[in-house]
Length: 134
Image (cartoon, rainbow, N blue to C red; front, side, top):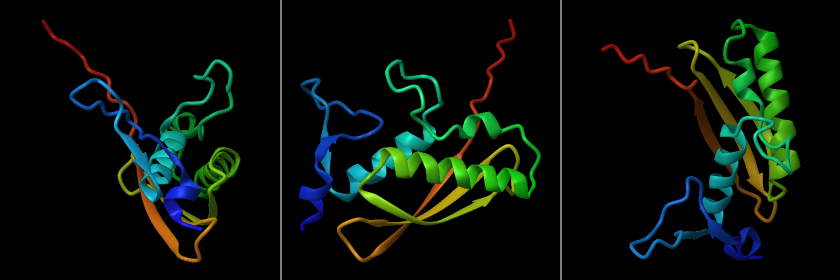
């Protein structure tokens, strides 16, 4: 089975518009990667009809850098990807936090229709608060 047919086609995340204002369509492995990014970056309880969508990583950004944090992130990422991205099989999740509050999440996954594993590193950075001084 060919990867683009299996993965489908649709707009990637974030949505990019062409010169006519239509979303640029993506397909294949790049669409799957875009979907993984969207699932991991999306805060929980922000979708009206799909309140559990997202990985809930943003709730852990201020937690201490210990094994419990790594285990929770691995659990949240595995749970969200296996629930909302059925085109992949998650093989391994590596979490590192060398520069708090930033978190690096390495995900080794395999497309369900291929025997080749891919590695994707997701850098999670908290939103920076901007202070305006008059």
